[in-house]
Image (cartoon, rainbow, N blue to C red; front, side, top):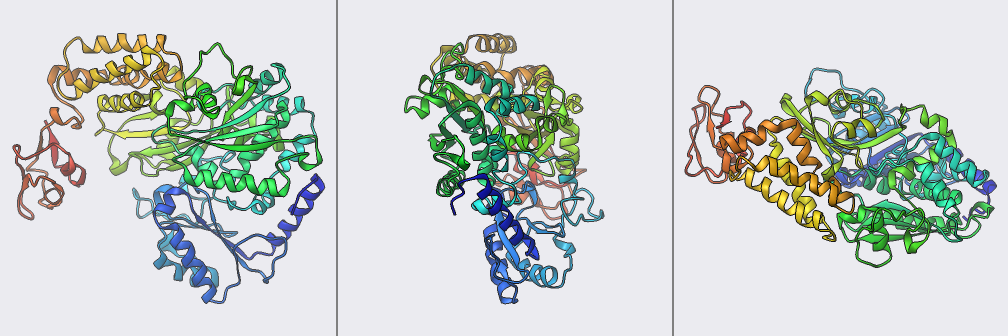
Length: 629
């Protein structure tokens, strides 16, 4: 069906909602990357097969005309967020969330829940830290979801990502229709009123960027969506592109109307094949329906979108390097005095925002800038999506109002530290961010507070660490990542990061000297001042933040020749505490070089000559009997 006017859109949406109202239940299987890796697609196929055998009328596509009487809809969705306990099956309207679902459990789901209307207690979420606690039935009373507010992730987990009709039924493109009824300046004013700041990490006011692009003049402008997400531990943009691609397209269309652009690009890293496929299909579906092309919804807006695949270079997340890559040139940054809103892609005025930023735009236009501005903190309004990973009980994709504290995220939504070990640090902002200690847990998560504390918002990675994390090794790891990803254009970044990494590498190998910390600090400052782009300028952040908050660990590596966390092999010796060892034999079975000897229920011993300091024994020990010195 071609949707040529706003009237067509409204009529089609009404027909779809009528069909949706006829559905008895919706069974939504999470098909985010994590759940798919755990077998979610096998669960989905088993659900379809078993339901049909049970005589249930099943619909797999939402269509304006439903043929069955009160059918059950079964479909896959994008990431539902709770990656730690996938595969997930969410059943609506009763809000039943089944976790860790295997194909073997499908028969019970069909018979007990879909046929008999019963809830299967064993498949509900179980708190690993309090196994006697009541199991929450659905998302509404689940502690992981309770503290969250969804804007950018609103459709992920609810809307079929490969269905234009499903997106329209959920209200899709109504924000575009609203925007097209307004003058471009009015749309920009609404976005500016919302206070939306770039969610890619820079935090530049979105409305101000759009207005600057218009003021640059000229008769040709471009809109670019940055989907080159490359931070270790970050997958927010990937999940949005995979799980709600039409929302991203709608946000770009609204921007195109606001700034007067006729061509858009989505730059996606090639390592995201599912995102590339979903976006490609969404673009094709919109073109077929008339939602991309000439005179969209009967307006003066003529706009199309092309996909551009990145080769995996982290530096191409930087705006000017990304644009050069789209042009077919080497992805290297330009000098910062050249502003992309004035001279961007092909030297034309260009608006570049990241995936999450565009995903927020439709809700802002539809609900109002003041609605968005009422959430979050005064200088960082709205919500922010994060990838909560590391040594935390509940890992996954989350979205919280700005100003939510780190403690609320890690110990509330995240459920605390695995095995109740002591919290040590949280790293925010990706490889260019910083590591914050326990004293920063009550810090509000917003652009200004994180920057002031020596870290940054970044795109939204949040890596939690426990007491068995070596902060020197963490800083070395991130420097190694940036060393490999530097484009090499400027000397301070190319050579400075190399030398900084060499100093930290020496510390982890017991080769540090008394003057190394001073050298590290001076070199880090030189790199910050002299580098051309944000990659080099922020590269020393992990080092400087760990030095500021965990300086004693650096000193121990040099002065004592020891790694307090027991991570750096050359500085660590493992031994077993005879009073704590229960002789469970787990360490013996896990030891690769077979350096551990002992019998069941007898104290075990590590042979120092054979031990390779891999730490496998300490990882599996349930009694904390494996110690370091």
